[in-house]
Image (cartoon, rainbow, N blue to C red; front, side, top):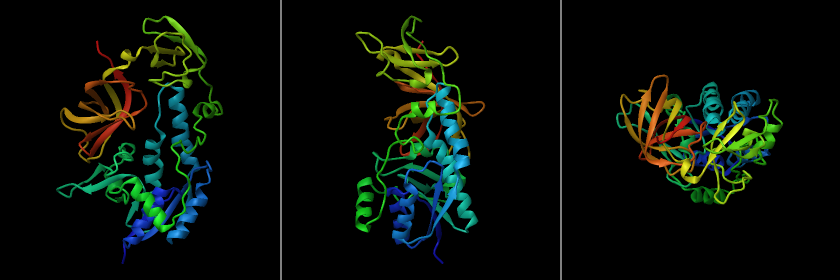
Amino acid sequence: MAKGVLVGISGGVDSAVAAAILNEQGFRVEGLYLRNGFPAGSEHDAVAVASSVGFPLHIRDVSSSFGREIVDYFAREYLAGRTPNPCIVCNKKIKFRYLLDEARARGLDCIATGHYARVEESGDRVETALFKGADREKDQSYFLFQLGQEELRHLIFPNGDRTKEEIREMARRLDLPSRKESQEICFIPDDNYRGFLETYPSPLPRPGDIVDREGTVVGRHGGTHTVTIGQRKGLNIASPRPYYVLAIDTERDTVIVGREEDQFACGLVAKDCSWISAAGPPAGVLRARTYIRYRHRGVDSEITPLPGGRVTVRFMIPQKAVAPGQAAVFFERDRLLGGGWIERGLRHA
């Protein structure tokens, strides 16, 4: 009997083609659409994809979990002066969690999504490893660092060995319906996160001073939630040289700014680290390439485990705009080793 696979269907081209590929490969395909309480027209597209490819689509309402685990997290981080990454948290706590639960309940062998990443058995076949996708411009492995062996050993990424253009061409050839792609956060379709926070049922930070590194007031801000680390535009500071946001002090409602050269950090401390290998963190200093945000080019680093799931990362070359709340993800060549959440940057003495 053909292996059964449950595919996460979003209504977009990537998940549509992933399902079509698995169908062509002889899998018994079923789909799962997660209704998160923020309608964006994608459910209609997901239904159309399932009808076109020819597989049953199951719809599960996860709006309560999504609001608690993703939306509340997003607002809480911004209001605390950190820069959240809701897609990473959603992958772990919503998408892959419910995919696995539903697949098990329906007696299906594995799960799949349209992510551009690859999974392979390790050389000794004891573990499953996670690698960057073949299309480096579209690689999404950064967003998957919190996955562990429980998810990976059941997981298929049909698009991982293909380029985005190849996926688009397959969609055209198969005449697959799909919605227009969006780079925005799914629950903030207009990309106006400040407006979203203003509607959130929590007190907003008060306006306050913008100060330079010496503590001199150089401007005013409309609330610490309106700025992010590394921001240059929109600070409204009269100066012949631009200022950049270096730090956000929510306790004092203060934003600290400096010049471009002041942005550089020699490393960082990350917390709540997770590791792809079941063996957990390395026993000693790990040499790997660290990515401090999506689209970052990465930097060679030395990573030292600390008690309590934390690490210290020392960059071989100083990096700009190390933002608390963002993810630091560690790679050995194409292989994802693990990652954690940036607690603070480390400055040169």
